[in-house]
Structures are given as structure tokens and as C-alpha cells.
Length: 192
Image (cartoon, rainbow, N blue to C red; front, side, top):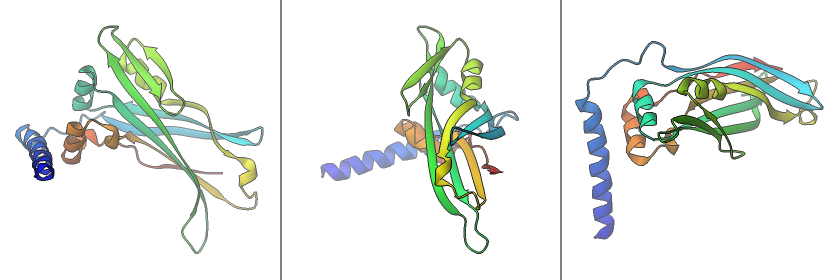
């Protein structure tokens, strides 16, 4: 009986999230809202490939509103290294996920950017400053050069998005029905 009550409450919560989304007029994303990988470079130093990238992060109005109200914005950066093959699908050599969280602290009126992989954080006086800092990837170790065959050709891919799975449950449900929460860049590819 208790299991049934839990299921019913989850269904009610999901339906209310859908109803909230349906009651609000569907506004198009602002023209400048979205995530975009603008530049990528890979350098080989001390037998390790390092990634440098410039990413433009412009959240939509509902994401900004939630951030202002204290809901952290989880961001995930995904990197894939693939070996090109002529007659088969490209082989995945390695994948890397960097997880970040942008947060607003009303008491200090500051924004913080936390790197959840290595548990470091930086503070910024403005949201734009925090997003600019998050969008500058400098010397991120990708892969040891000894793991790659110099005779082969490789493709690197980078994508940045809001990690909707890390949102609080009510917002996660809203992200299912609202495109304003599913911000993601296209895959940006390069060869090396």
C-alpha cells in the first residue's frame, strides 16, 4: 500500500510539473541563449595531450531565474577521443567527463564555480564573470600520447550541456518538457 502511495505521489508531482509548463506561455529561447564551443586546440607537452577551449555559455531566462533563487546550475563537459576507421564505426579510445556547478550566494552576492571532479571552487562578483571563467578551458589533460598509435588518425569531440540528471527532481521533470532547460552545444570535432 505504501509503495502504491509513493508511486501516486510521484505521478502527481510529474503531472503538476507538466501542468506548470503547459500553463506558462511557451516563449522562444532568447536569440543569444545557448551553449556553443567556439574554439578548440590540443597541444602535446611531455608526452601528454592537453585541451584548450573557448566555450560560450548563455543560460536561458528560467535557468537564470533558478540560479538567482539559489538552485545550482550543473554543467557537464564531455570529451571523446575516437580512432578513425575506414570500414567500421570509429573506435572510442577514451571518454572524459568534467562536471561543474555554478551557484549564486545571496548573502555574499557572489557566484561560485565548482569543479566537482577535483573539488575546487572560485568566486566571482558577477554571473557573466563566472560563466566566462567556466568557458575558458586551459590545459585539461586529455590522454597520454603513448596510448595512441602515431600511424593512426584520431578524432576529438567536445560537448557542453546542462546536466539535467543533476537538477533537483522537480526541475528535472520540468527539463523533460521544456527546451529552455535542455541547453547543450553541438559536438565540436577536431583531428589529431
